[in-house]
Structure formats: structure tokens, C-alpha cells
Length: 306
Image 1 (cartoon, rainbow, N blue to C red):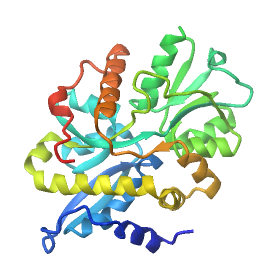
Image 2 (cartoon, rainbow, N blue to C red; image 1 turned 135 degrees about the vertical axis):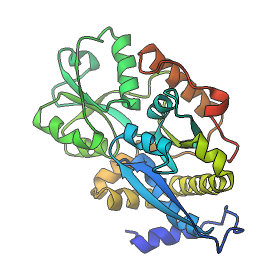
Image 3 (cartoon, rainbow, N blue to C red; image 1 turned 90 degrees about the vertical axis):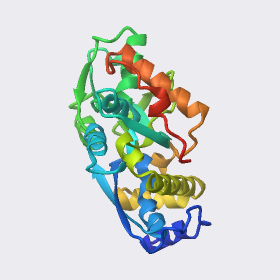
Image 4 (tube, one colour; image 1 turned 180 degrees about the vertical axis):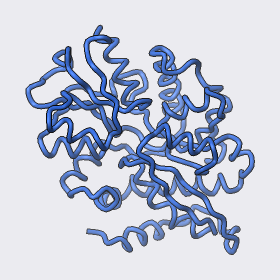
């Protein structure tokens, strides 16, 4: 098992992608993140940014909407943003910028033992997080199956879902990792539908900031985006670091971490596939009345710092 110092040393051992011109000038930045393993790369960023004179603090939020509101207000400068919540904040008058892909995947729909198919959820309770990618996928599937009014949605944060599933308070959960892996390993639920089988595919997480902050701090934005890319590539190319991060940051057993990480697709690739998935997500949200309109794409997607 990698020790904590080994984890940081591994991130520092990667050939430097960041310029060193700002050494000697310490700046501070807060990075908003979530209680999910899709954001594992964020925990490597403080060590990388320290090399270029940037002191970074990771701030965790249980609510994805709260996290994006904190980015929009400037309480944190950048963040790993659920892209559905980011679009909701943006289209309500707080311009946001998606600077890079954050991580693909990380979601699943699990039902308690005895439920074998999606159709068997009729008349059942499904837990899902309000405003999340999981909710968008679930609503799309319910509409496709003609089940929009056939289930009861129970809104709760992802980390609160496994125990209600175990107790039988809900019949299924649509949540993200590592709580999917935790539920699987303990036998509390099993996957009955592939949540990625929608027009947006594995679209999930973006590395985002408020447009006002990007305009004000372009040089610092570039350093942070470069650190995000380097950290993401490190956890992608070195599974041991992703595994260790899951175990330490989320207090998960190794077998849970292994199952969880198999459902993560670390990527900072922000090209056509990512952008098409993001636009399909917006269309799905508009169709389900979760979004009044699509963002202004030429501003909302800002990959010039990559």
C-alpha cells in the first residue's frame, strides 16, 4: 500500500508540465470538490501547484449545486463541477466556464435484491440527488419507458443513499462512486440499468470556474488547468494512486475501492466527444424542464487554457 508521502511523491515524480516562472510568488486558491471518487485527481493538485507558487486548498461539498454556487460567488475559485449543476447556475445569470473535462462515468442505478429489471421499479421508491447527472439520466429512462409517474423519487445526497437501500427505505438508488461500490460489495444492491445508455453517454464532471474569475486571473487559471490535466493523467496512468486515494480520502476498504475505481474513466480530454456529450446533456435537461435554455456554448466551453 502506498503511504501518504508516497502518494505525494508519486505526483511530484511526473515530468513537470507546469512553468516555474511564478516560483517565489505565493498565491492562494480554493478548489471546490465533492465526496466522490470521480474527483480523485483533485487531491494531487496541491502538491503540483505548490511547485509554481500556488497554495491550493481542497474544499469538499456534499451538495453539487452548493459547490457550483460557491464557485459562481467566488467563495472557491475553481471546482470539479457536476455539469448539470454548472449549466443550471450559468443559465440563471451567473456565467460559468467549463475549462476541461473532469472525469467520465462514476454513476450507476442499483436496486435491492429481488428486483431484476428496470420495469420492476414501477410503484417503487428511487433515491437520487437533486440536480445531478444521475437525475438527468434517470428522468430520460423513465420517460423512454413510459414510467414518468410510476415511481417515487426521493431526493438525498449520494453519501446518504447506501444505508436506506440496505434498510429497505428505498428500493433503488441512482448514485455515484464510491457509494455504488460500497453497496455492491455489501450485497445491498445490484445494477439493473446502464446509466450511460443515454444520448450524453459517460458525460459527468467538468473542471469549471466562474467566467468573471477566469477573465480576472487568466495566468493563474492556466496554471490550475495544467495542474488538473497533469493530476488527471497521473491517476489515469497509475491505478495504484487512484486506489490509494479512494481508500484514504473516503475511508473505504480495498475491495470497495477496487470495485469503485472500475466504474471511473479518468480523462481530461475535452475535444469533440466531450463537448458533444455536454451538449446532449443540455438538450436532455431542457427536455425534462431541468433547464430553461442551453448555455451560450462559445463562452461556456472555454478550453483555451489546455
